[in-house]
Image (tube, rainbow, N blue to C red; front, side):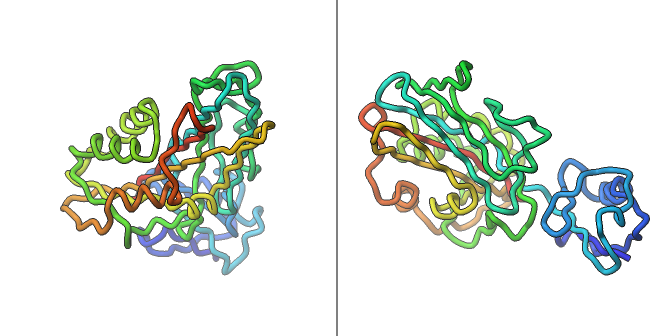
Length: 284
């Protein structure tokens, strides 16, 4: 008999070696939508199939775990060099516990994304931020990944360095915060218009920004340029949690901006080679 669980949402249940994965998913879906969880065994995502779990090497006493999906939504990377047609190579490497789910511009077939830890875009960039990947123009590099375990690599706790804001204040708060970090208007507008509509179900929102070290440890970003230029990289990844009652924030904007900028001055597009990234996760 094999045990499985889904965090603290369901009690552990017993299944048998002859049980297939689709049947297990169907049982869980009576409590949680299929699209909102993933099954893992020994840290590896298990695809839905009619194969019995014994075929996967799962034996009596093993644990097949079901986790609520934590999907890093719309992390996008924008690049602003000092000269047009600047060759730039951008590489992303996921830590163990993440799987890529989508890329654009595409560098790998979707069917291969869950088996790779690293992706690379070889591009040329113009001063206005336009990128050219294999001859295709793009405004940004897009990637998405799912976290396969509640234990990390991104820890979703809201124990400190939290902003608690009214939902109606979200747009103004994020625009001002990102402006202090050096993000241009199009990045700020993109962030607000993507996340704002998804956070309106409650009157309050808790926000925590990953520190540069937290984010780099989870998803390593490397930017290579042929010319020996200094590259300013600013990465903003937010954890959101909807609140029904007002909470008590314990941080301030200037302190958190200083953390994200790693105690450096705000980047100056047009005077510095700048790379920006933004994304987030809603934590339920």
